[in-house]
Image (tube, rainbow, N blue to C red; front, side, top):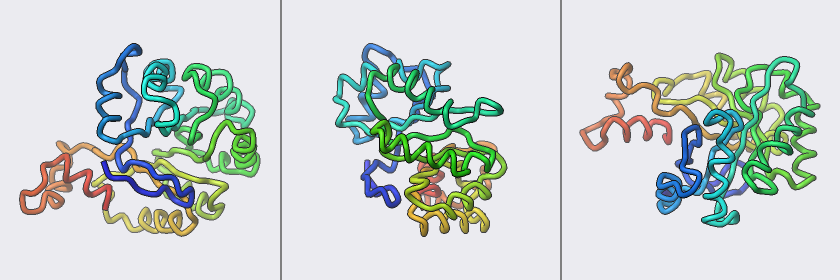
Length: 231
């Protein structure tokens, strides 16, 4: 699997990452090991994944292949009154790290952000403090609700290293969306790394949208919609 630099971090990551919102064999998982063999050493984990068992289910794999050989991203999802910097830190320290049996993660995301308030100075300071403590290397957020463009533009105004990376909803059905493209360009200019998620969309329901990427028959539909994301 080819690799690419992630924003201004300079980190070298695979262009396909392994989403961990699925059940893994906590003893020896063939999916994790198979992906790793092909160069996919980026684990996209989250506290909410797999019924809250995500980090526990990948702990053995981390030990089997060696911590230094993996990039681990974790996400914590909060809303309402629990959405405070202190609660993010508590979840990281008391759940994410001990469940994974590791001391730090490469990337820490505020998960499923939909409120611009979560990009206020107190949250940015939290990310900076976690970096200084050595618990995370990089900081950002994921978003996939209706205000993705608004949040990306807000992050671009802050720039890296306040926000190192954004994981956002993007698939072939949005290819050519002018406002989203402008937000992508703004983040790129600000040094923010970008990772697309939900890239498969629904290749069944949107046949008219993926057919144009199929080209001269060179790509099957799964390759076609992934190619749209990479482009």
